Image 1 (tube, rainbow, N blue to C red):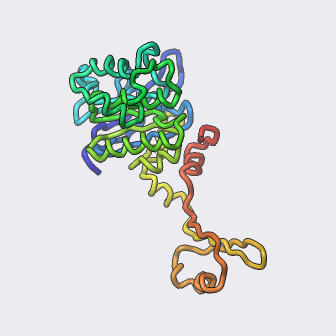
Image 2 (image 1 turned 90 degrees about the vertical axis):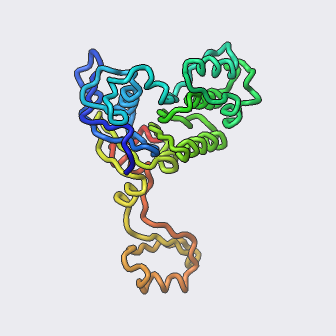
Image 3 (image 1 turned 60 degrees about the horizontal axis):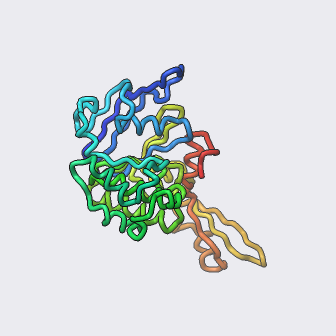
Length: 289
């Protein structure tokens, strides 16, 4: 574990006019140089937690330290450190993409090169088009550029690839990886488990305002998976399934005989998917997509 950027202890938050807390005493750390995923069904407290960490909500209970200092003690200089890309892009539709980014860039002391960022997400040729003419995917990519305008230390990303085609999603994910490789830290919320598996170093599952499990994707898949190997063979015109325990597999006579004599079509370990883990840990299937 590296240096904690955020240390969150006993975090609680209740919306006005609500009798039930949205966040119920959660603890976690976000370590410098990692991509940390907060996962859970709709209404579990993900977005609330993210809004607290970005100081949109300030009436929380508990403690949050940012680089060892109480988050509440920071002034507006805190916003120089973070970049935020929420799920629903907000732009001035009558302005061009470039004009939008120039406007938002003026809010910061440190400023990245806008055209370089636009080029990186494939929008340079469209920089002079009004954003009203952009597709949803283009607006999502422009939203990601906006999050990088101040060369932040920490990125807060909510459903950052949702609605993007595979090619453009790949561009965004590669840029997130590059950001981490340069020492950046990212806090990610998403329902897309493929993104989680590819990007996140650690994830925390939140359910009804409480964190129920925290680990790396690999640790979760080992913990919740089955230690077995499933082998499909084609015999006498039919596909047959054979299951072997991983323990002692190299000395398993039946397995070794199968390798020598059978026509093997596929081999799979008992590793479970993050979609399955999401459903098992949170108890909710409907929000996984």
